Amino acid sequence: MANQNLISLEQDERIEAAAARLSMDRREFLQFCAALATTLGLPQGADAAVAEAVATKKRPSVIWLHFQECTGCTESILRAEHPTLEKLILDVISLDYHETLFAAAGHQVEAARKTAMAENKGKYILVVEGAIPTKDGGVYCKIGGKTAIELLTECAADAAAVIAIGSCASWGGMPSTIPSIPGATSSPTGSSGVSQILGKPVVTIPGCPPNPYNFLSTVVHFLTFGALPAVDDKGRPKFAYSRLIHENCERRAHFDAGRFAMEFGDEGHRKGHCLYKLGCKGPETYANCSVIMFGDAGAGTWPVACGHPCIGCTEQGVGFQKPIHTVAKLKNIEPSAFLPRIVEEKGVGATLGSAAVLAAVAGAAAGAGAMVAKNLGLSYKAEQMEEAKKSGEKTEV
Picture 1 (tube, rainbow, N blue to C red):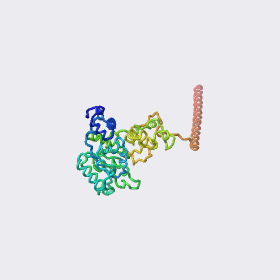
Picture 2: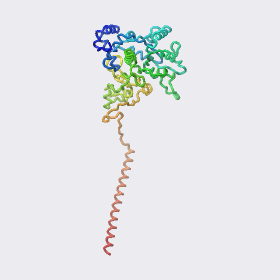
Picture 3: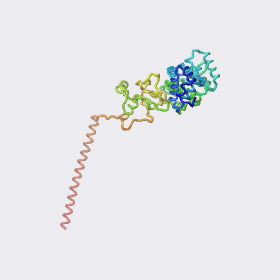
Picture 4: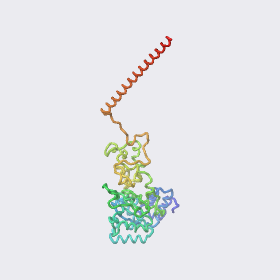
């Protein structure tokens, strides 16, 4: 099936069965697979491989851990529409442990985690949401009597892949912010990202919250090819985090033309001008927010389109570290030299004091010029008289 054209699969019984599981008709299912392949930046023909994997391969077991977080990443997954949450966890993946979504609790849910790990040893996907506190032995986050460090280390040992979802799990996020207290060198609980705890690279899907389709596409890539997608030096999938937000922002044309909102509610802000001067971090943040947006609610469903600057939540060193309204550092992109500068310098009128000083200097210069001219004139007359005197002396001889 993987070598077939996607359209030719429309009549395949396995495709029909998979579409029925997802409550889609066959064409909608194929469109879903094609969209995933496109999101991943896969070559032509890969959409058929995606369709085959979703339709026929065993659903990967997913163990989802929660540590220091607000559950915003899970809330983002709850709002996915293609497929919806129940289709995702029942037909695309097998969500075998998730503290927020489980009906069970206590010993029952911990037993389910251990059973899923044993039955899928070396095959399950570990998803981590939230930062891991390391200060004082990690006592600031415990689940089932184990610290976050212990639980993460245990679950990662036999995982086929580890995915850190959200900025908190990716590098520490907001919990890792160092407070503005004299002498403070770390966050109150020493929060860290997953890779720092495990001591090895992991796939990171940062964002506060991240887009659910970036996570879904990563999982489907693993399901289809048995490997995680290509990542950058920070572990982020390149299909989602290889371009600056600024490059595909709908306000980019205003940036290039030098049209900026200077404050919230002014004329430029009301007209949809660029938010760079209000602190938009789009020019230094890598993510696909401006392309796929959020919530499947149509155009304008992301912060910049709604009128607020990007805070750079996917970029370590920017999100939760730079003040929200501090002007961003431009990466790779600057307006044309023929257009107004980002911060256009303006002249100021002369003060009375500076005008008086200038007048005094000008007067002194004029006086000095007159004296020089006078002295030059006198010098010339003296030379003529001297020459005339010498001529008379020669005549007498």
